[in-house]
Amino acid sequence: MNILGISSWFHDSSAALLLDGELVAYAEEERFNREKHTNAYPLHSTDWVLASNKMTLDDMDEVVFYVNPAMYLWTGLKAVLSHLPYSLSLARSNAATMPPMERIWRLSRLKSILCRNHKAKGKFKLVFLDHYRTHQASAFFASEFDDAAILTMDFAVDGTTEVIAHGHGLHIDDKMKHRLPHGFAIIYAAITHVLGFKWYDEYKVMGMAAFGVSRYLEQIRQLYHYDEMTGRLELDLNYFQFQHAGRASLFSDKMANLFGPPRNPNDAITQREYDLAASLQAAVNQYGLAMASLAKKLTGSPNLCLAGGVAQNCLMNQTICESGIFTRVFIQPLAGDVGGSLGGALYQYHAVHGKPRKYVMRHLYLGPDYATTIAGCERQFGLKEHPSDCWQAEVAQAIAGGAVVGYFGGRMEAGPRALGARSILADARRRDMKDILNSRVKHREHFRPFAPSVLAEEVDTVFEPLPACDSLDYMITTMSVRPEWKEKVPAITHHDGTARVQAVRREYAPDFHSIISHYHALTGVPLVINTSFNDNEPIVCTPEDAVRCFQRTKIDLLVLGSRLYYRDENTHALEVKSDKSPASERMNYR
Ligand SMILES: [Fe+2]
Image (cartoon, rainbow, N blue to C red; front, side, top):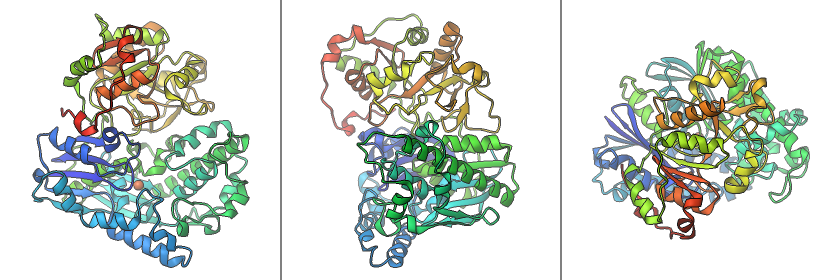
């Protein structure tokens, strides 16, 4: 049975291909169209997942969409009717990237849009799923567990925000639900906006938390009431106005009075903002723990699966893993809506069709590799390759010598984190490396930490063990750096002593593992800084994207596959600026 999962027209559009229960290809549309968090129809990603497996849309038995339009419409109508006359603006609101009625119109025509875009006759069945189902399935059916509690927490697009469920075999049984306008993601998003940030900036607030103290925790608790016995959550809606004003305006004057005036995005960040971020982190840690405890009580399972936007909070995930509530915890690394296409396909295959489970998520190298186009790219840009007897050893030597390395190799990784296929690598021993990376390539806020990629077999050498966590390979949880290592790897040790870890395994990333192994042999340190290969743009997709980033920034060494290009040996190539061609012309299928 062949199932294509897609997401579109909200944000983070993507496509996933499930062939007889195996996830064979996945890609986010933003990598192709170069628009961060794009809501565009996933034209290129769908074309790629199909063509890379020599298939067409008519080879699919089903296409699954990650939102239920009827629920989306009903949720919107209920919000408008509940808050008249203030809510009339909701109907024409374009705050959530597209006016709702336009979205409904497109969804009603989705099958014909699919057929037109991919030249198909339309033999497949089109299925719409409740959004939370796709989050649940993305975690449970990708885990190793036959039995698990499933906790999803989200700012849901079609109404259901938080669900505790029991996954067993091919079944997912819901035990408790929260629906809009109630959900912790709404609190998190509203305070993110008070702090002067915008949608998708929640991870920045998480990074800020280390620099503050949680002196606003009591005020945050005024925003909601949570009953730990029943799990009932109720926001005090006097502090919010998204329910009648839409997603452009989340909080009311009452919340502004509670925390003080919202920060203008152009203003400097003061201690008030750091303290508010720290308080929010403390609150989400407590809330996550309470929900995990309730999930344990309602299911009795020793295992937990986590997904939904809130599950991207690495510090909350660490707190839950450390709590001992569950023996094992799998956090879906595509916890946000990027996982909707994958989860939709998995839900249909297992829960709807009752097909046996065989896929377990072991890695995220699911995208295109472009290996055959690297030589052409070298010619196109006039790059001069540097010969090397052992390129992995030379890359390690360069990192140890203080170079900033842009590494492009193998199939592109899925999700928001670079995991060694499209990564910038640097020396974690240097205290000044964070500033060097920011000034030369990344241009990020100073409070955001850089993450480490560590040899899987050495994780517990550097970090306090987190044995409950099944998701150490994805930078989806923090770990605490051992006291004796903090001074050895200052560039990846955050202000609170944590780091967002990726464990690198030889079987899934042999070249990346080899680079770190050589670096380990040279320095005695089994990890490097790994940050995404980009500069305020989506992570690079093609070799051409990588070269353009190399040209624009001050990366010292570019690695394409096994070919090395030093900046100082490529002065001419750096002066030649290639014009940007449309993404469709740059496509090269595996
Ligand atoms: Fe979601």
